[in-house]
Image 1 (cartoon, rainbow, N blue to C red):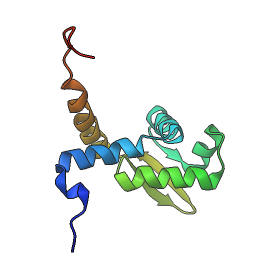
Image 2 (image 1 turned 45 degrees about the vertical axis):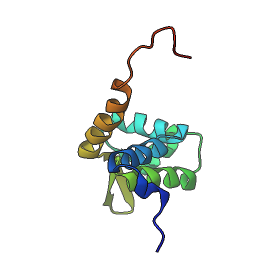
Image 3 (image 1 turned 90 degrees about the vertical axis):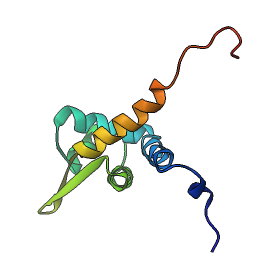
Length: 110
């Protein structure tokens, strides 16, 4: 069995890429903003906030949930979504560490 190219990267790099991919769509950023503002949401409320169909919002919610940034609890026929605090903090630390590595260049930089 052949190893995939991702096996050549660190677990941290792979995790960071998963977070970045999940954050890589403006609809997902908008969903996260709604959840951050309200602390919890029912899917229908999120649909009311975005210019997208229910099915499209559901697809974006699934992507965010798959990476663990959000979690959802079933309440009858509705699913209540909120930020997964533990994973959110991990993503914050992981992505923040990358940005903190930057130091200003001297004039020899491009």
